[in-house]
Length: 150
Image (tube, rainbow, N blue to C red; front, side, top):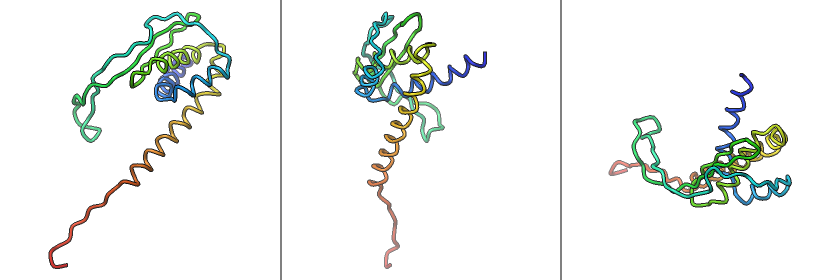
């Protein structure tokens, strides 16, 4: 039971990482690992919209921020379900993310893929966040007030 709980926690992380990964990088990894598989699609890659919610100051009550475009895919690979939902209209990204989700859950090649891909996805996400933080910091404006006569 503990093992399945651990894999579920890991899966939450890798689904998030795959959803924000560079689709070209995922395509390269698919080729590098020789993952030439043909999945059964439960839901073919499709694009739609969802209502995004937010919280004021990150802690207040939720409010509807607006609609965002998403792409999703649900597939089955050797009896294992793979799921993905990515922001934007990139159907191939949704398919690749769902494919990797299924393969990461499998007994083979799952552990090897998890060891090779998940740390790299973490590193790329951290690099992207650090770059975004630097970009925001470089445009930060500090305001101050002065009393008249100073």
